[in-house]
Every structure is written in structure tokens, then in C-alpha cells.
Length: 274
Image (cartoon, rainbow, N blue to C red):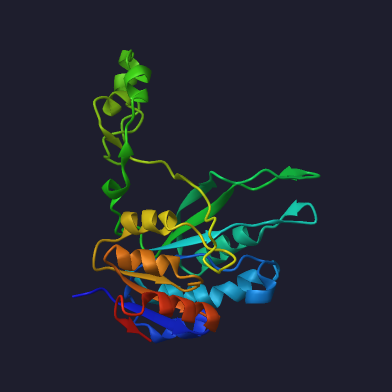
């Protein structure tokens, strides 16, 4: 049985109410940032952003499974020489509404080109905020392990007795700061910093991200047959990647042109439900 793709045209707050409660395993999305994409998405003011996003966040809470995860790709900008606080305000408001702010990942944009302003340099990173409904959720950490590399052979060659016994794990992981646990291992768990180049081919969308970004989180938080949702689908990157990886995918998009572009790309490839 082939995995399914479902596309919904309209405002996310309204369209999400059509989905069954507790039916989504992973939400991965990047909404329009404050004061950005004015010609396409209206350019929501930084002062109105939290009020605009929270009805959507409440709907996402309803459709996410208790074991599911919500990853929000977002980044505050500088306005009039000062960093905006709307992302921090959004985090606090979401916690008030029942979300657990479990983790924060950083996407380091390896190919960010240089730039300079009077009081700062160009951003080369973005936030990926992890929210959950419960403290116990599905997470497949082994799926994103990375090669240990040769650095460990030289760096860990001469360990003191203190290195071998200090600070055992408090959560039973077997690691902690006992450095000897890392000897003779081929694979290691990654950090929460993800090093990926930006998408140079924007796929006819002003803010497309690289396929490797949703792919990493789909590996980490889902297994084959699970359902992935992107309520701000855009060029459809999350939907395409999820389907390629054997997951059902749902995309919501308010711009008909983008939804039609996605639909044309998947036509005759996989079943599409509207």
C-alpha cells in the first residue's frame, strides 16, 4: 500500500480543524516570519505575531498525538537596530497553552554569505524549536547517529582515572561525562546543532529550506507509516521528503499557486487526497 499525500488549501487555523484529533506523529513547519513575505503572506507584524499564531498552535495541539512532536523553524530578526522578542514571547505563550518546550535545535547555514550592518553581522543560523504534549514521546535517536571519526583515537588516547569514573549519567544513558564510554565506538549521537547548506534553488518559493532539514527530524521522530504534517507547506519540501521516506504526509497552504505547484509535482506519482 502506497503512502498517501493530502493537500488542503486555506488558512491553517481553519483547515487543521478538519483533521482528526490525535492523528499526527510529527509536525514540521516554517511559518512566515514576522515582517517578512509581505507580498505573499501579508508580513505579520512582530507585535501581532503571537496573537496571529496561537489559534494555529491550539489546532496543532489538538491534532498531534500525545507521543508526537512539533518542530517549529523560526528566527527573530533585528528591527531598528534591536533584536525582536516575538519568538521568545511565542514560546512563553505556547507554554501557557499546555505545550512543553522540550528542546531547541540550531540550524547552522554552512553557505551563508557575508554581510555587515552598523551594529551586527549577517545571521547564519535559525531556530528549530521542539514542542511536545507529553514528556514521554517517540524518539528514534539511533536513526540520526553520525560516524565517530578519528578524532576520538587521538583525543581520548590517554585518559586519567578521573575521566573514567566522573559524572555518570543521571538518566541511565550510560554516557554522562564518563569519557571512557566513548572509546571504541564507531557511531556517536549528534549534537543539537545541525550543519546544512541553505537551499540555493528556491523551487519557485521565496523561503524553501533544504530537503535534508525535514529529513533529519523525520528520521528522529517518526517511523515508516507515520503521518507528517506541514501546516505552512510552501513549495512542499516536507511533504515530498516525508512521502519519499515512507510516511503519510499532509500539507496545508493558503496560496493556491503554491498548492497547485505541489499537486502537479506529485500527480501520477502517489495518490493525492484533497
